[in-house]
Image 1 (cartoon, one colour):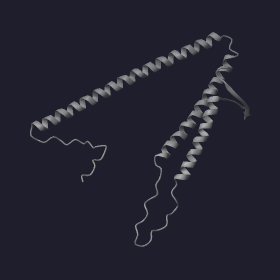
Image 2 (spheres, rainbow, N blue to C red; image 1 turned 30 degrees about the vertical axis):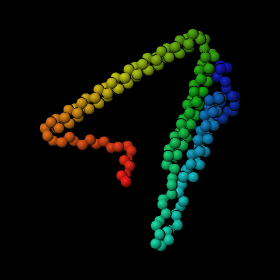
Image 3 (cartoon, helix red, strand yellow; image 1 turned 90 degrees about the vertical axis):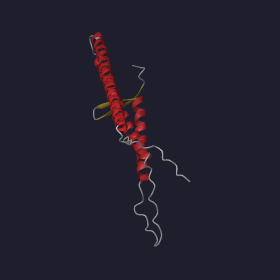
Image 4 (spheres, rainbow, N blue to C red; image 1 turned 180 degrees about the vertical axis):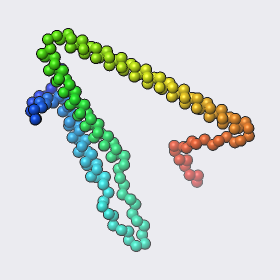
Length: 180
């Protein structure tokens, strides 16, 4: 197990022996940094309590600018960083438990066989999920194509009968520049 280089922080907290791996340590550092960034973003993004009232006869000042794009990004990093900590901690606990089971196991081959069976079962499950996903994508693509074909047919029939074509509900992403 030397390839899983561990920084042994052998602290016993309430009967729980923690072995902090490099992955867990890196995830913890990233999570603490993301927490600090989130706190700073929230504090810096808060608008002032009450702006002073405008002078008589003048326009009120514009509303304060808020960094709307930064807050969701920092919040996402915060969630992902702490999720990585939970996953790394769980991974370390599972590997530690496997090591404990492996040491006194009388029949090492039986444990290896169980691991091989588990990997095979996971591969079969993954293949089955991919097949279901492929079928669903094909079904949705076919349904979309049929809907487009039906819309085109109905629009053509409206034009042929003299009714004008129904105006499409299509909006330009970019605004057209004003004519000067």
